Length: 307
Image (cartoon, rainbow, N blue to C red):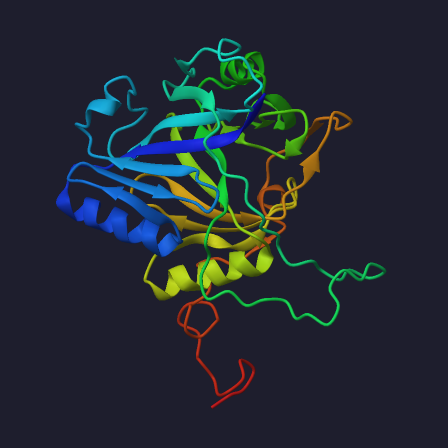
């Protein structure tokens, strides 16, 4: 059984500036740098899933063709449960977009981390305990990958054939897939937009709870990184998000509180629209210093106070 993403590999664009920027970005993102050399950077999340940033001429990339020009995603490694026979799935293959997919017994560590419980009306789960305020995010794991597709039907069949389950669809435009029957809403989302070439859209990192989405996004804003959209909430997966531009390709997302599905779930179909993508979202993000939208007046000691 596929348990989730063990690692992803990006290729940098070959410039010294992009290399330095990529290192700073993932450190600010909250990952731990575990190995560094002149042509590779290896980062870890809390559970040991890895992000590799490699120079474009790195020998490990020879079997991982680029889907698009420039810095981009080159490989996704999926972790298998340790009772899964190694011959159950090919060790490596290319998906219909040319993205390398590799499979191995999972390297992720078991960790005891829980987000803070909420107190919705009628359910008191947090007592004599305030919700946390995070000064920054420290991602737990790599949550999902989203690709621009130019062959949606073939790509859905490819992932179904290796064990992925379709969770929901935008007919003819997008497919959400989870890597096992029981699990989070999606591990892969394929998005087909007319005249849009194949490539990486974004990679999502799971954090503890909505409070860490906010804390991480504010910290990235204070560090000078550019918000693409967020914070906000997806109505289809119920997850909270905050997207930033990523120096090694596409976007990157803090993500929390997605729906958990079982074999009882029936895939739904939706018509694409801005409100289906986001129930609500803040354009341009929040400034990490004023806690308001960028360029908003700071006010006095309280956000509502006028100078």
